[in-house]
Length: 315
Image 1 (spheres, helix red, strand yellow):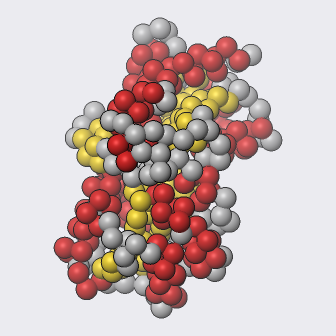
Image 2 (cartoon, helix red, strand yellow):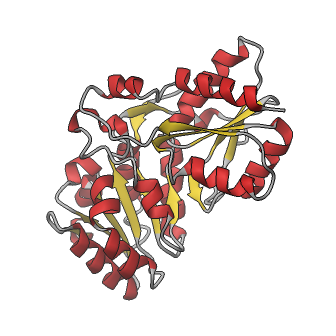
């Protein structure tokens, strides 16, 4: 595994790097530019950066208005606020008219750590996925985030993307044949006994879990599902048919996110055991990020346990 970088840092730098190429690109923040890393866009292009203060709903509305004028707005805040506080405006002002606004939620999941349950947004996937026509993304590392930003700037329509606070190891740049495409998952490792479909930093955990299980003779396929909606149904179906059972893994509530998307699709198409790994419908707590993740089983070892549970259900 390569360089460690937080996906929020990779996002900020990638967006700033595109400022000159796309004069219609504009960036909004809700008084958190130093945390969301939209500060890099501010430094590169201050005339197209707008700090809206602690007013996420207003920020969404203004961005929607600018989208109707041909601009490409990216709006930024913590996931709890961009997906939570501004949900009504995102739904009614951005998604309902299908406007070209990208909603970015930084500091998603339990790895926000010391900020505690109020800021550890574990519901953002479910909230955004429930909005008709809203694309939902969660890139796993710096390289994939860079590719995602480039793709989103070109994509015409509403989308939500989660960023992480912690520095994570870069893995996708070392995978032979890796290609980023919106709405398409990437198979990072082949396997025949079980498939782990992961998103965000849980992709790296899934790769580590696959190594642990390989020593026990279990062949694990690992799929990086950076786009949760629309789900890559073709890739999911192929994995279900070829490996016979699925484990999903996300740093989010197991209700309404990636696990729900996979289970909903397979239940009506090709039923196989689907075991969900994530936060078991409970709030987070304050603490050092690594310790919080361990307390909730969001680790490679947690994935190993879920894989063994899935294999026990496999016919």
